Image (tube, rainbow, N blue to C red; front, side, top):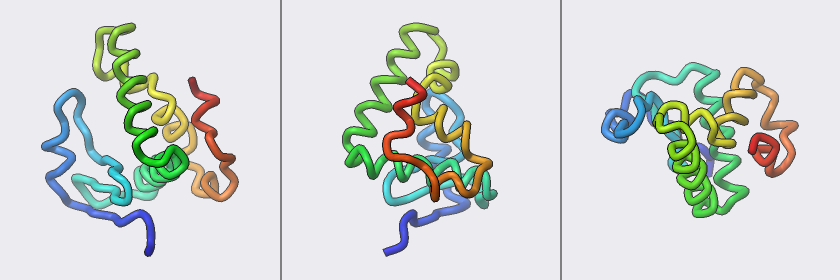
Length: 113
């Protein structure tokens, strides 16, 4: 099985854009985009796939919501809360490095807390 399964030109991200505008989302083992993926966005989403795998999915989703709520309480702004999520910080910091996942150490997102 090849992971991730890539779904492009989907309306799913639009329907999930409750708090912020989502152009792509990773829901293991799928990466879903409103448009055709460009390499940087796809790499960003693949970083989330790795994060989800190492936290056995449930841990990732629980921590993701925890960090987002923590940011929301701190900043009272949904977009700013999104930017302080360690998973997003790691993915944005390395999404242009196409070799990152080949060299990434386990639990690297921990460095962004």
